[in-house]
Image 1 (tube, rainbow, N blue to C red):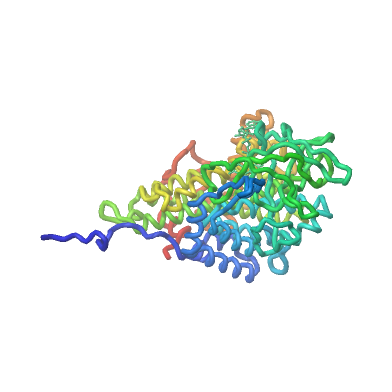
Image 2: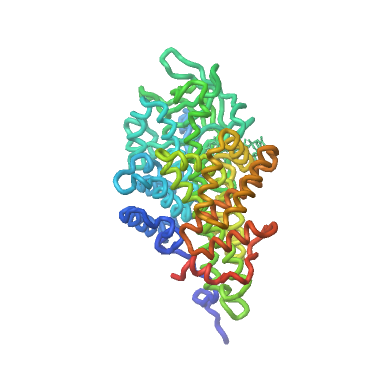
Length: 547
Ligand SMILES: Cc1cc2nc3c(=O)[nH]c(=O)nc-3n(C[C@H](O)[C@H](O)[C@H](O)COP(=O)(O)OP(=O)(O)OC[C@H]3O[C@@H](n4cnc5c(N)ncnc54)[C@H](O)[C@@H]3O)c2cc1C
């Protein structure tokens, strides 16, 4: 009689998870983009990559997304609690990211990192996102929120030391008793998220110099943060407020959590619908100038969204290549089958271009404070970069799922989560059309940003850029006359600057292949469109080398 031992029966041709990799050392694209950074910064990135690439971190990410946060509106005695409880794995991820300074390092970087703060922190965000994107939301809002505090020196004095702390403290306590603090953003309302002028939440001045806020917010991520940064209407117009969870006398500032969103992705992090029933807010910046007070904040959250998205795209590509190397079909590894190689190579081009593009933006933001040309470049390219990268990433992940087969369509595989998480990033911090409108706004205000961008393209592409520059000038003129074409210009700008950024740091053939297949050919909407003149296998092995 034949006995089958199903418990120990070997399973053939299945692909083990890609864990235990140093996310820095295994990524030549990242290494090329941070080349030239001071060695201690690079060493720090390698340490970060090895810490976040472990099986333990993947497990924390899985757990934090399996057990969703829960809302506790009241305590056992019927008193309002307004709490969100998270899985301990979420807190573990937060603890590590705060220790790495993801919530504040651009504001207190010193020594070697001080001149490359956005690039260095960006590289850490990019690697962290490859493991877990949901918990990066509060890292981003806290870091970006600090920019607004520059308009409120007294508040900055109290809050900055707490935000800069590298100790994550999730306890619900007055700030003075805590070892660290985080910020959340509350701008979106039921009747409008993009159109902030439609905000109905009201803030009335009180005799003690604070404001009393009455109204609601519809989508507040990380609602357990120590302070909410809130837009509300005053007699003078839309104004910006810091709303602390606790008041100086130690009492709770009433912030009612009504319901948690049952989100498609970013499930490790909570997002709440909230109400302000007469909540104390502290004015940040000039009254009536709320939108301009948060201008820099918006730039920084958009950079983070693009960096997170690029990290997700990288992780998806690396998983797809890993699966294709270890899975066989029709007698050979998938990676050796010409159609699969071509698909992966085509994806690798977008991943490399997206990464080069977002690091170029981070570099411009680092240089902005003393270089007006870089500042002008960053003004135009922030919405452009956020637009293109967050749009292209879901397609890359969708293709990666297909490359890895049915196993990637189940929740045990991180690609399923990555796909859902990536879908949030085009929406947050300005959806596509709003970014297109922002591009138009920048172009209408001054010709400097376009000239700065064209100069970067010319520097990167040299002679080849001549006709491209003319095309971009013409597309700009069309878009200025016809707002409906703003996405066409936005995408062209993104891909051309990406090609210039690729030329600067990578073998010329990569930029050539990207330019030719993306800008020199008719419309394409799927991967695998690279023609045989380019060595697809070499691209794949260069971008994702064998371990
Ligand atoms: C995961 C996640 C987390 C979030 N976290 C937060 C948070 O912490 N705090 C917060 O305040 N909000 C948060 N949001 C909300 C987010 O900021 C809004 O969803 C976003 O700003 C869009 O607003 P809306 O949903 O009201 O859509 P709408 O403003 O109604 O826009 C709907 C669509 O119309 C388009 N549109 C709008 N105006 C125009 C126009 N003039 N021309 C052409 N098209 C236009 C937009 O591009 C969009 O595609 C979060 C959202 C998600 C998905």
